[in-house]
Amino acid sequence: MNNTSTAGLEALQSLREQLAKVIVGQTTLLDRLLLALLGGGHVLLEGPPGLAKTTAVHALACGVHASFQRIQFTPDLMPGDLTGSEIYEAATGGFRFLPGPLFHEILLADEINRAPPKVQSALLEAMAEQQITVGGETRRLPELFIVLATQNPLEQSGTYPLPEAQLDRFLFHVLLDYPGVEEEVEIVRRARASRDGHLESQVQAVLEPAQILSLRDGLQDIHIEPAVERYAVELVAATRDPGRWQPDWADMVVAGASPRGSIWLLKAASARALLAGRDYVIPEDVIALAPDVLRHRLVLDFAAASAGIDAETIIQGLLDKVPAP
Ligand SMILES: Nc1ncnc2c1ncn2[C@@H]1O[C@H](COP(=O)(O)OP(=O)(O)OP(=O)(O)O)[C@@H](O)[C@H]1O
Ligand SMILES: [Mg+2]
Image (cartoon, rainbow, N blue to C red; front, side):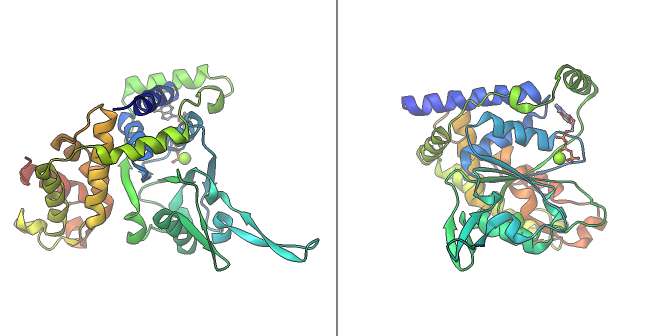
């Protein structure tokens, strides 16, 4: 490992410390945010209201010297509110492009499932292609571009579930759970202690975009043994044919994860290795990340729901059954 990447890794670790200054516990959440930043993938955070989803993403943005924008998704949002639009300039008699919030490096798409499909698909192009097309012209987004989206589960009226194609664009789908009592005591204490509640005054920016990009380049040099590579692919393939591993799951999965899932699983595993200071992936990297990388890529039949089986059950089951190297 050269000096630049050692410094980058140290900066990434101190970003973790900055986040821990404002977020109590939620270690999986913080870990996935760092891995996504490193791997260049998008994250979907899901959990009940009040679990620090928005706060965590905002804190992350404060910890990186990058341009940040929060978009509150609402039913009346229009695609142009994200992409920007051509505006007429009376002085010149011509049109000028006014870039929208998508042109920032770190984007918080808050309560993403409250916007209608048209808006979600504008985001889809941006996430998949790192570019957007407005008025027939295609424009590149910043190199660092990463979407951190939040949604509430089992939503009430006025929400539009994300289409499968859109879900597949997320590297991680992270599910949040309530803190324990000890943690919650700490949360209320910190809330009382922070006077103005402004994250900007509590979180220092410790990481440069250039450092992130150079660490990202380094992911290609992380070694993956053929047996580990094969294991990741077999896990992903097993989500498409779970009946082979557990006969009563045969008809429950309508669609499993695609090769995009395999690519991302190994990329995330490489990022986990790098963050742990290793230059090679171990099976544990794949095992630890498989649920968050795969759960949103499985589409289950309603027979599964009535049998009380969800994506989680199937992925955990496959992790138990598919032999690790
Ligand atoms: N683990 C935690 N550490 C620190 N603060 C927390 C934690 N959990 C909740 N809070 C506090 O609870 C409040 C709500 O957090 P936030 O608005 O980020 O929640 P959210 O998950 O985005 O909720 P919603 O789904 O309603 O948007 C904030 O004041 C936040 O600081
Ligand atoms: Mg929120």
